Amino acid sequence: MSGLTGKLWPSHPKPQQDELLSSWLSRVALSNAPRAHTFCHLVWPNKQIWTRDIDLCGDEALITSLSQHTATSLDKARSTKLEVFEGIVFEKLIQNGRTRWIMPTGVFHRERTRFGLQWCPLCFQSDDVSYFRKHWRFAFVSCCPRHGVILADRCHNCGSPVLPFNRGPNICHLCGIDLRDYPVVIGESVALQFEYCLIKRAYDGHTCLAPYEPIYPIAYFDIIRRLVQLIAFSNHAQQLREIIARRYGGDPSPPVYDPDRHDIEFIPPKDRHKLMGLVARILPGWPFRLIGVCSEAEVWSSQILKDMKPVRYHLWEPTKQYLSGIALPRRTGNKNI
Ligand SMILES: [Zn+2]
Ligand SMILES: [Zn+2]
Image (cartoon, rainbow, N blue to C red):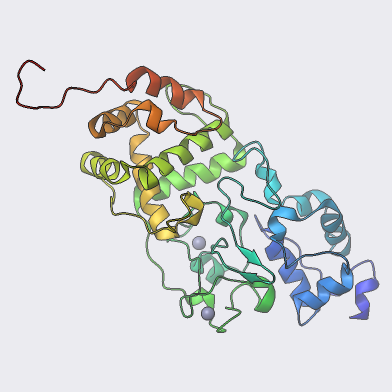
C-alpha cells in the first residue's frame, strides 16, 4: 500500500451517478486495500470515519483529499454529500443527530443498529459496479423509481443492516450472502408516481401544492412529512387511513414501527410505501380531500398542527379555515341538539 502516498491512488474509481459519499469512499478504499478501515487509517490517521455516519459528517478536508487522489473534480466529489439537499428537503444536515427525512443508521462503534441504508436489488444487478444512491437515504423513498420495486433495508438471510465498507456494497458483512438476490416485491402505482415526483423535487427544487403555487420546497416536504406522521402515529391514525382507503383506495393496514420512535424514518420500507400511497391520494385538489377526510374523522386543526415547528402556511391556512374544531353535534336521540 506504499502507492497511497502518490498524487493518485493506485485505484481511483470515480463517483457514479447520484452515488452516496459512504458508498464511493467504500469502493475507493476496498479497491486499494483488503480492508476499508486499514486504508482509511493509513490515509487519514486522525479521522473517525467508519465509527461515524460519514454521509452526515464527511467534511471538506475528506472531500478535497478524495477529489485529489482520485482525479475527480471537487464539484463532483461534493455532490456525493447529503448536504446538497439543505434548504430543499431539510433545513440543515445535522452531523451528530437526526435530520428530517434522512434514515438513521444507528452508528454504534463500527456496527449499525438501524436500517437506514436502503437499496434496490435490481439496480445492484444492473450496475457494472453495485453502489448506493443518495436518494435511497430518504425516508420518503420506499421504492425504486427505475424498477418499481420496494427497496430492501436489511439482509434477507440474517436480517442484518448493510455495512458496505466491510465486504463491498452487495455482500452481507455478517453472513456473506449476495444482496443482489434480495426477493423483490413490486410497488403500488400511486405511491410509485408520488415518490418519483418527490425525488425529482428534491433534486430540482420545484414544488407546488395547488392552488397555492409555488411553494418553497422545504415547506412542501415538511407538509408531506406532517401528513405521513398524522396517518401513521396520531390518535386517529387508523381511522384516517381507513377513510382515505375507502374513499380513494390504498392499503390502510397499520405500519410496523418501534413504539418509542414515532417518526417515519424508523418505519420499514414496505410500511412507508403504504403510507406514502395514502398521502398521495389526499393531495389532488388540495386541500379539500384532506379537509373531507379529517372532517369525517373529526380531526381538527389543533391536532393536525400540534407541535409542528415551524408551522407551514399552506397547511395552517386551510386547516384553520375549514377544520377549526367546531364539531357537528353527535346523534344522541335528542332532536333538539
Ligand atoms: Zn432499481
Ligand atoms: Zn446476512
